[in-house]
Image 1 (tube, rainbow, N blue to C red):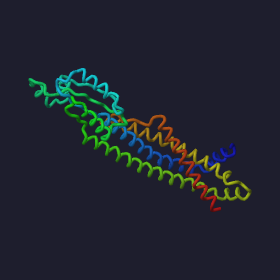
Image 2: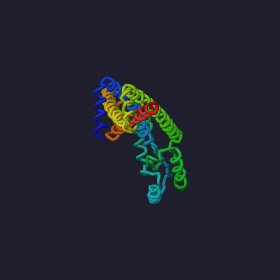
Image 3: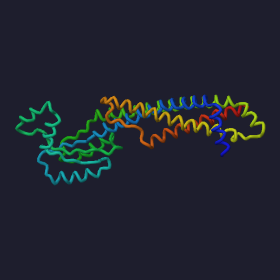
Image 4: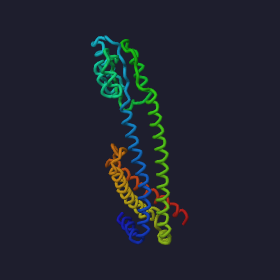
Amino acid sequence: MNLVTREALHSFRRARTLSALSVTTIAFALFVTGLFGLVALNLHGAIRQIAERVQVVAFIKRDTPSQQISAAMTDIGVFPEVLTVEYVSETQALERAQRELTEFREVYQDLEVNPLPPSIELSLKPQFRDATHAAAVAERLRGFDFVEEVKFGQDWVQRLDSLRDIAGLVGLAIGLAFALVSIVIIGVTIRITVLQRAREIHIMRLVGATDWFVRGPFLLEGAIKGFLGGSAALILCGSVFAAFRAQRIGLGVGLRFFTPGEGTLLLLFGVLLGFGGSLVSVGRHLRQV
């Protein structure tokens, strides 16, 4: 193990320019992947914030006994999809309308009779904030005899589902494409290193060195280059993210950077790419000699 480590580090010193080029290439490949990851994370966060607004509202018939409503709310609260249950009286509904619908504030103030019915508002658990589960909860609410109407914004929830599906598919496709490009770039840079040392590898094979003995330094070298490239990519992503946030534009509000765990995953991804690229490149060369 000490020999493998020594040979890998010695390779860095012997070909400093090529090693620096390899690390730089890996860094920019992972930098692009990291930027896409940031976009995907924040897009997912934005969709999740929008999904938090998914509610099922059951409008209640006037003069329904409060005991009946309380009993029903207890039953509704144990629905597996339901996160919270809130009762909104006629007065609360009117106050909310006056506060939120400012363009109709004067109209609501001149009313002699409150036209807004009481309601029960349900927020759903994160895993159930889609049109299918919202419709299922709405259908169950219609089974209560005091419920006059149930709404959950079916059209916009369906559009949200479509947006979520499209974002997931596009993210997976682009992520795989970037990963493939990174593997190819890293493989090429390691291949150049292997070809530069082809004579040395040939001599090692002649004196009886096993394939894994030959591979060892290259695999460690690739992993180190992947780690260094991943570290540089993480720094570049942080610089771009900080510069974007410094613009103080509306889109910068609520954005987030990689968590320590996600940053570690990017580094590990770089190490795996470097290791894998080296494994493929060295293996191909050994099969040819």
